[in-house]
Amino acid sequence: MTTATTVRKAVLAYSGGLDTSVIIPWLGETYDCEVVAMIADVGQGEDLEAIRLKALASGAVEARVVDIREEFLSEFVFPVLRAGALYEGRYLLGTALARPAIAWAQVALALEVGADALVHGCTGKGNDQVRFELAYAALAPDLRVIAPWREWSLNSREAEIAYAAAHGIPVPVTKEKPYSVDRNLWHCSSEGGILEDPWSAPPADLYQYSTDPRQGPEDPEEVTIDFEEGTPVAVNGEPLAPVGLVERLNRIGGRHGIGRMDMVENRLVGIKSRGVYETPGGTILQVAHHDLESITLDRDTLHYKLGAALRVAELVYYGQWYTPLRQALDAFVTATQRTVTGSVRLSLFKGTATAVARRSPHSLYSRDLATFEVGGSYRQADAEGFIHLFGLPAAVFARTNPHLIRKMPTPIGR
Image (cartoon, rainbow, N blue to C red; front, side):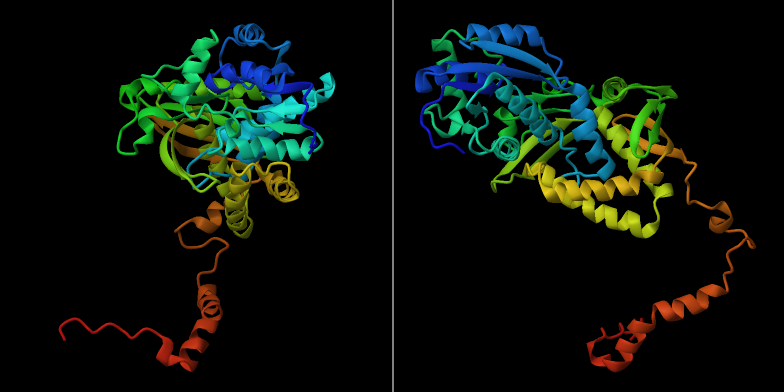
């Protein structure tokens, strides 16, 4: 990182939300530099042209919308879907995946316009500051990083709201509803406000991507997902590009209340944080993909991959996307997906997505072996020798160390 104190031009990852809305005038007052606002289109469903104009009105010398929806899904989301990675077994990593994608676009723009600094609006308590800055370090280590939340005196959202009002900047936040919301094609997350009390249930008006499961259709809906080497390629037999596919599943899953998650997670910085997530399409894909692997991966590969998925989830959550280990694990996952081609049929009903049928040209399932009927290619008599050899180490240990083996329970009646 450069040690120079002078900043000529800075590229800001701009969302038009509360934090980045006040950063543009703050940068002008603090660094007397030109600010280029970069608005990454990751499918957040907002009027990005209005956001671009707002950035210019706030003092940016240039504001550019960069459409990275296809790259976001193909290069970031789908590799993690193929890995089966869920942070702490629940979170589908929607925000964590968007950050290295946005940083990639931000660095590209900074190099194009000759900027000497990169700016983000992340707080000093959260994970996103790490995700952005580790990406910057990997992609543009010579550019300076400015993190206003670690410098300025605006130490609360209320102070930011007041600062914005004083500078005539409208922000989509009020003191009555101070949620921090992050939206993209993969999910919608909400934090802050009443959610900071883990005993308070999320308000009904918090949810944006899904209907209340109790208000969903009274009849289940079936949907079929086709995969090629672990990547989803079609819905109900219709081939779709990544953006269209996820949008379609978000609509289908959203009306059934699929993919809601309310959890307290462990942030990288050591703080427990509560987040409410909506990932309707992603949840459907995760259930379908895992189910397809059940018939296309052998036991040892599947079990090992389940362990690797935990590490992938941590690397993504911790912001370590551009690291050798993440890339190496991605190569392993890619190798496992060579046979993960086929279709899964799911039933959607009142907030649940359940796989009910699956097929693949690479299926390892053999009805002849699995049947309970007598006959077939499986000889049940072979089990005796297998059990003897499989249990041999335990038997030898028990005979050698009988005092270390738990005593048998007292027979009933004594």
